[in-house]
Image 1 (tube, rainbow, N blue to C red):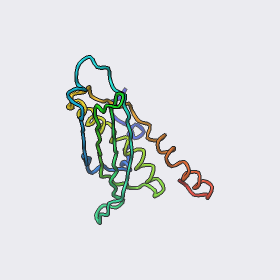
Image 2 (cartoon, rainbow, N blue to C red):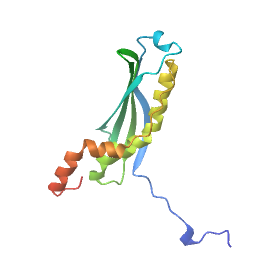
Image 3 (cartoon, one colour):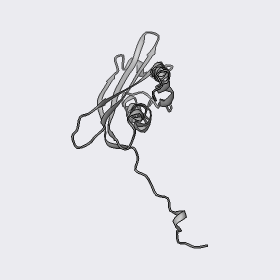
Image 4 (cartoon, rainbow, N blue to C red):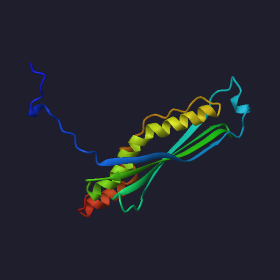
Length: 167
């Protein structure tokens, strides 16, 4: 067996259609209104209400075409009975550009693939935030961004199919 590569063995990498220029924490809030009572040992855990929202907007930039800011918003409220344990909210954003991608693929890329890349970082920040608030770190399960996209934009996708346009 030879250690040299033949032309058939060489795999050339294509540039990715998305470039992440920056990832950053845009906004953060943590409220711990009933501490220290909610932090006493022996108390059973609260019920969690977790919400995830996404936003995307084009950022005009002369030198970088198709530049967007994608924002992933995570909010978690922990309650037991009517007592709030904590409210944690973060807005985590990424500045991305899309290159070589047809216009009709921008929307799903911005609402599925980019959030999928951002999520582990936002999840870590939320976990650190709740841990620093005196509670066990809140570690969210993986999120099906494609399912969220299909659910959120189902009517638009159906309308575009009826009108013969690609979604």
